[in-house]
Image 1 (cartoon, rainbow over the protein chains, first blue to last red):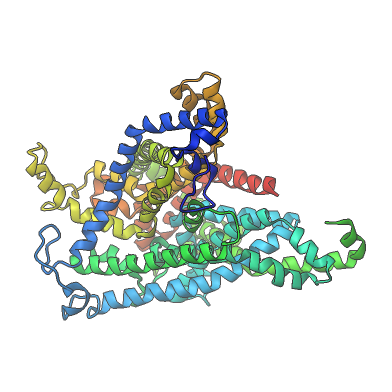
Image 2 (cartoon, rainbow over the protein chains, first blue to last red):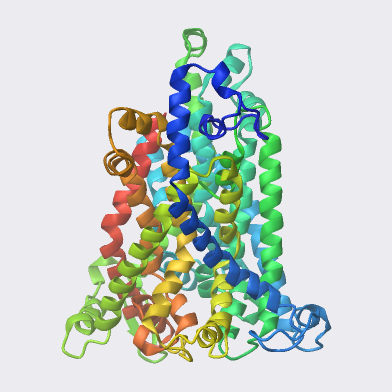
Length: 323
Length: 310
């Protein structure tokens, strides 16, 4: 029954699906019966599998076509006119490189993503640790507010933020400052939730062991807990960065001029009229590439950091996606 | 805490530790209060405030004693009154959201179920493909469909090629179907990941037990898997329904016609109208109140779950 999978720490369920030819000789009867039931179930899942592939085609092919047409040499979105870098660099007025609006949007998105990640992750991690250990009514109330900020529809938060920065908090002017302030509060729940759930699984034994060995509370926190939290912190940084790249509503409400519009707003305001055409596809493709690189770094980094633990590929993938 | 460390640490040490934890939570707490709790109070102050008649700008009134209900009355009148113009978008919002989230669930559940239960060794491949749209921004996914659905786009070309009647349709010219499918396409990746995580947690031995005890496959699914995934389905539905109710960009991108406006468009429009900001704030608050029950339910069950784990 013992089958060596590419991923040696794979879940027990995965091994059940792959009985080796010689399995019967070495395994007890119960396991044989169990694996044959599942094998039969698996054979019958043809309908489900077809359905899944149809879904995947529906979900991925449109994006593939959009990427493809960012390399079209003509303006058309449904007639291939040959490969070119026109919409990325060569077109003197409409390419991402030479069109000021698109160029600025690209830079603005990266600035927002970088700044927001740098602020959100430390604050969120500290918040998660503080809330987890500071067991008072205030802490539960704050935790509740944090979770509530996770589910409130983004439009409502964005409008409330617009009013607060224009009517009360005048030190946060519309534009990059207000955008970052809003994005931080909208994304704060990622590190807070991801790190908190990691804290729960770690428990307090390691810190207590450190304390028993003479470490002060802060030293135990810094030398023992922090290294164990690193995978969760890293995963949440990836989530925040990707979340900001994807964000539209908050930045649309809080941007001031075209100079502070990120990619999502530039696409939204140009798609009907304006710069409609493959240049937008090129801009979106560039963001897609950055997102995928961040996701890949996130996945590889997470795997490296959790090397010593019994975690499988699926666990790493779902963590990087925020689950 | 072990007995040894409890003996070693006096009460003052515990009090000092409390300050450490409070200090750690402080920056996040300040941010949440300043930019999450207070903004909603400001929204209320604007909604219950006045209008500067000269500049047609809203003037928030901070003291609840001086609050006025004029904006709320105006919104209520627009919502249910004889000349209501918010009524139709409100009904449309509910109908679109209900259809789109039901359709998302019908598509997402079998996919998540297959990957969690039957994907076997190819689980990683399927997961990568399922999570891939997660990393493509919402705007790009809408842009992709705008390209495809144009009058000369591939969808119409495919209709013509297969001689399907109904070709040459202007899909982007105010079709409710386009908007609903756009919402499904936009929000389904989040639902699938939530459902997958929930279904994957179900212990396979429970299903084997049901099979060993004589349940058919259908019965096992109906009596074991489905009840066990109930809370996941509810959580996943919140994940799609709440943002859909506040969505104003999907219909704007895929139709831009007055016949498909939703409540989010009305709120957005009022905020951009001079003198109507207060009404926009009032309508936003009304939406918030309607959504308060599902949001509280979700927040409380999430908070309870994180407490139980400790």
